Length: 161
Image 1 (cartoon, rainbow, N blue to C red):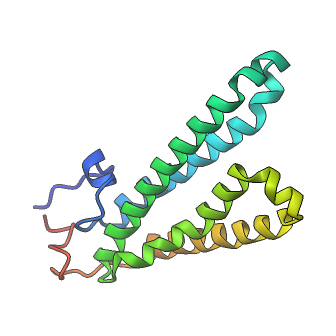
Image 2 (image 1 turned 30 degrees about the horizontal axis):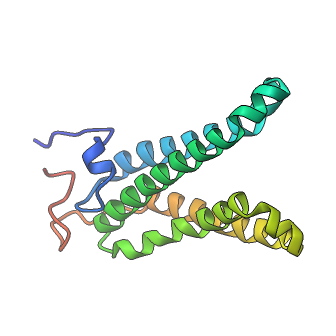
Image 3 (image 1 turned 180 degrees about the vertical axis):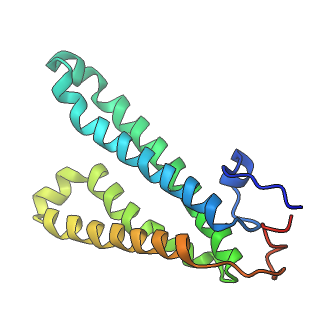
């Protein structure tokens, strides 16, 4: 009988090797998405909750912390997508679609002054929206797409190990 783990451990979460089943993917992928939303939403409302003095002091460290946490979560999302893509028999390179939404958002947060000066804010935001839409479509597709029932080139079925 197979031993099922609903949540994958840190080793599996940060490794693009092997395979995971749909349930593991759904729970972990969407949990990471919720964490990303909470982080970005919290950063957006934090200046309103703090005094101007504290907001000014925490602005730069919070930006760096947000970027580091977002990069770690997107890497975990990539690894989850890679292992799920392996389960359906596809290459993990397709998981790079995740970065279609992440990169424009990162560029707009790092170089917001230059983007505003060039008048490219709307274009960068639209590209980030399209990238995030691609991530959503990939997440939904991998959440419902059944894996290969037998062993494939990426390893044994997660339902039989």
